[in-house]
Image (cartoon, rainbow, N blue to C red; front, side, top):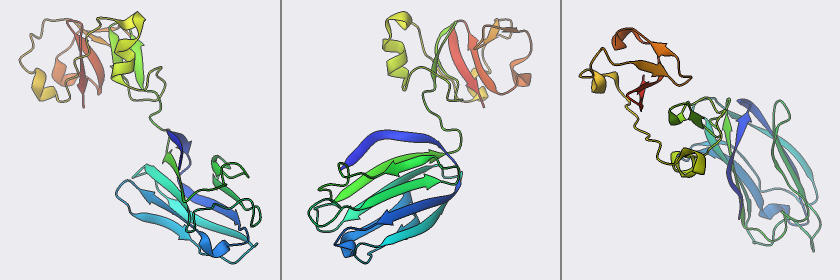
Length: 207
């Protein structure tokens, strides 16, 4: 049971509070928080019946992507015939990662919730004066490059990303260079600050 295929952004790195009130079969309930490689950052259970538990995990900024997993070993969830359980998982700033209720806690074997610490990449593909660009600061309008380029406002806008300055050494230094805001830069490409730039209406990223 995946409550959301989306990743919850902006969760504060540090302590994660896990509050669980078990139903009549608390021994069926366990949870864990793992990163993308499967490393466990916190876990709990099985528990006693009809009992309140307040536990914590600790997640870091790097890695930034995590998954909360809540298990019911019998597969009938934490509601309703054997009592109504509850789950509330928050970061140290009270941002909610997951809140269980009689509906989403009914008849599950596994609940999966994905979240990331830090500012979060969010929707990063922007529509710039030169077309679609991944500016990487999480303020964009599109989730993917495909979504950006498929928008009717951006049809036929090229999206050519160069990830290393070594790949653009052969570019004529006299060509005009623009940043993603349309500002022209007249300098040697070796001295450009890190960022996204456009040469001849094609995008490059200097890292």
